[in-house]
Length: 195
Image (cartoon, rainbow, N blue to C red; front, side, top):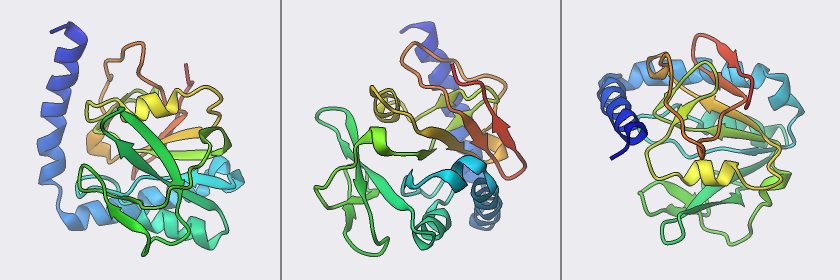
């Protein structure tokens, strides 16, 4: 096992119990503050289309953000995971209460076959386990988001959502790891020089 893989595994092992220890009340309050910071970003306000993720229990809650985006007339897309190919695809979601089904990891995913061209997405809310101030991101280890975000022609503003507890000094990164334009926590917005 190479040094990068060892470093990533160690960081995942360090962050998971911290997230598990957060109370639902603390997660909800922090998620609301994060949502307000995202809504104030000029890149978000200028976006016509937004790709989000459906939150797991230990992630920043994106549902209020998606509801506000739909109310503002933005096009919303959610990811669908193909474990056989290792690919993520984006699918339009006109309604957050209908047309979703459990995906391979138990996360609700769009049931429709209509697909969004990744090149047409303006703003992407990106989940992760750990983030740093330079846009480094540690995912859950399958590479779905890195493959999706590195597609040719992808021009979206990439915004990581994190609780302060997920911010670390440095996320070890390899050649296939995609850096973000910004990371938003309950306390501040980190604007990053995307490599």
